[in-house]
Image 1 (tube, rainbow, N blue to C red):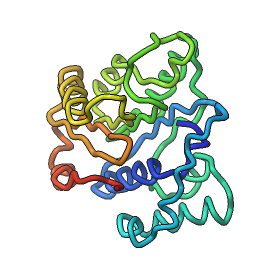
Image 2 (cartoon, rainbow, N blue to C red):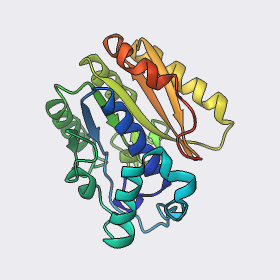
Image 3 (cartoon, rainbow, N blue to C red):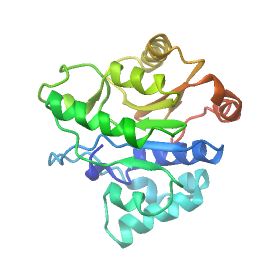
Image 4 (tube, rainbow, N blue to C red):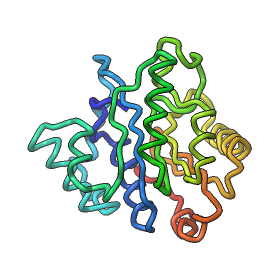
Length: 224
């Protein structure tokens, strides 16, 4: 996650989903995996805010809040949502995630302390699950690595992961990632929630299945 992405169409999908998950009674831990701005134009996909007839119905309160934050207050930062209460009583890891292995280990050590009592932990890497480079190498802060997912799931929390689509057929890619998520964690259920350019991968603890089953049954596209 970068602050420059705040409030874009993928963020709207993300917050819609997180709010839905919190509304079924799960306490949230949000690991932003925040990285420094890179000067690119990513995050400028704000046209949805000018199309309330098409998008506002998914979460009117959230839609209006994001439009105020961006168009009136010109504030694009995760700090805005952390202090807003939009995500209920969520707990946040908001430090910058470094590339070096020692810094990364310390960062995820803090996550274990912050999220010890959370039902669901959401990871928001720039790109998604590990591809390349390896942990500790330049650019590794853009990725979440399987041992970090496995360790979090082992604490008893369900996990939700932001994943950008690579340049490959999407249905097969999602199926492969879900299979790997289930194999790596032993999750009782896995589920994908698709948005226009990204997918969110959910690994569910057995004890959370009753609360999440109705939401998973409504796994339509989050934002067209």
